[in-house]
Length: 199
Length: 250
Image (cartoon, rainbow over all chains, first blue to last red; front, side):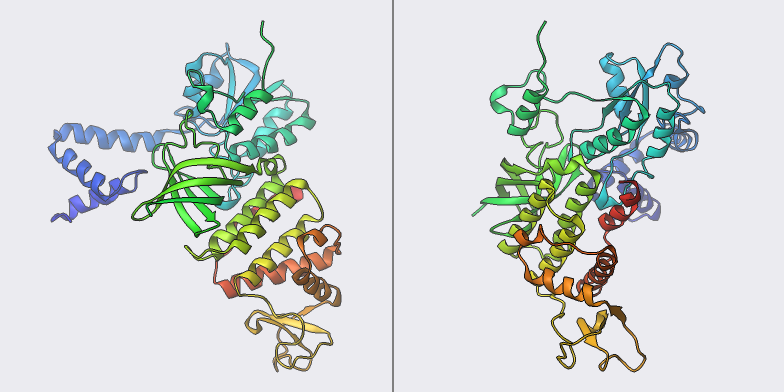
């Protein structure tokens, strides 16, 4: 309980953010009060500007400020290889690995019957349209290895196969640095199924 | 007892906080419970695979003030095969959603546990008509929870001869003579009535041989959907709408 309507409003605003409960919201409110006014203004401007300027790339649905994102505009990227990811935050993670030089398509979620998120919400028709142009030869599905992510992957594979695109799924198995003894049965099963010849 | 060792089905598994998952479990001993799986979204988590939807497993849970926390979990059966076809996936989720929304929290119901386990298993094996399996599941779940629609005879006079009609307030079917003065109610064809009675009587094993016409299936699906919404006071089921959305594309 704060004795100022302005502070109450601010606490309520913070509570709309994911993972912020009433106590954390209060802590943030007090922190904002202790900041320089110029820093608070800068933060408020950054929030509004990001919300106003950032939109989906017309080709891959990644977040960008332009019509097309830097990856889609880059002529050095391989247009024949397309990596499908679940969320925009997955793109920088794959980019950091340095192992992929193709382009992306961001679904902004996975098929979820319980949340009523179907193929139309994920813009799967747009993805199929891209695939039907014939430029993409290989599609790597990098959705999360969860039930929702896997169901989305199988659905995409089923839809893309008639279009003559080679459909691949990212590998599953033991995390690097992990201990075999502590791996669960399903992960081990998948690791064995996806075994590869050495050398 | 702060710890609970139980066999449970994962009805839903949602991201929670930074790296956790919030589970709705159907426990054999405790009924429907909510549990947190700490760190289950981390790549190296031991719990990650065991706290997924469509899992039947053995769980060691710590009983907290508001919810349980998963300490250990071991997969007994995983119905991940349901993900191979989007229709099976949506149907499996629909069964779980029905149980999650209709079953009150903390009331053990081993019959419902077995029903869901069997339904996922039949769905994964691909035996029989999936639409009929859905109707069977709905009707059997209603019966186990005390909402069985009265379909053997007219709810008002006990007449066993058709034609029959239904509206939700009646809680079952009624005959021509008992049809309200305003002549309300939806007609139930003879074939659909027989199918409805059959589905309430047969076992899961007999279900594999059961067949029905498209019109009967549609009539029955409308009946069960309306019945569930009216008598259990639940809103629309998103997974059912999802099933309808993907149907023309399957």
